[in-house]
Length: 167
Image 1 (cartoon, one colour):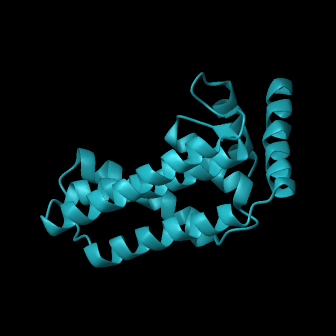
Image 2 (tube, helix red, strand yellow; image 1 turned 180 degrees about the vertical axis):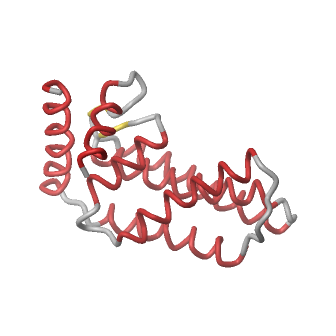
């Protein structure tokens, strides 16, 4: 976990890395819409047997849902790996570990599909089902956030910021 904290501190120092911002319901809605659009793209591409783009859209549906969750808290990050690491840091005690692993795995699948010929068979129905479930799970997490839990999560990011300055 020490290396994880070091990586998050690195993310905080990057110009497009982790930053505390004002929570924004407009951004929450916008990124949820992007997530829904990515699901539609995943379905259309899967139907047309354009597997690499279906895999990519699956990842982006998940990523945009997580980005929406962070917008609700008032945190932004434009570096995908940092966003995923922050999601894990903030929610590792409250979400199933499988959800975090699934997001990481989905990103790896997207990179593989984007840059290399797909060698292994993609189980499209399973991927699409898991993507929709993931997005719903993130929505439930968001629905469960109240002002107290948002303040607690923001405080955890501020704690990271404070330790970032001392290291």
